Length: 158
Image (cartoon, rainbow, N blue to C red):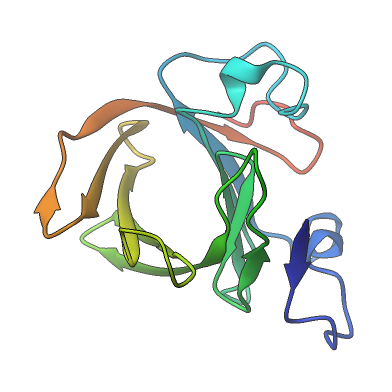
């Protein structure tokens, strides 16, 4: 079960893509997908891919491993037999043309790992990314791949 703690918002985030205030949509992963807008059909698309939706007002959502990380609220996933629960949120900054997203997962009490941080560095000019996990006091091997920009309907824009 997924809950969001921002239910008092007056405007749904997804509407921003079709307005003058619409932002940027892109995804990153090991290879280009034939149908990136339908991420739930193919299970290989849920792992190893990052789906970004950035509004011009600074709000953004990053979907990764079937969870939404966002900077305007926290996503709470209840722990079940099939999925570990936790609290998910994100931050973003741009340094020298590189978009740096920090995706944070706080595990609920009782898990051996209290927090996991994934840093995703995106260079849209070169259409590449690097992602790296930090957990249990150490950095894990980075993963690198490519990025593709899309419009609000999912069509290529570059």
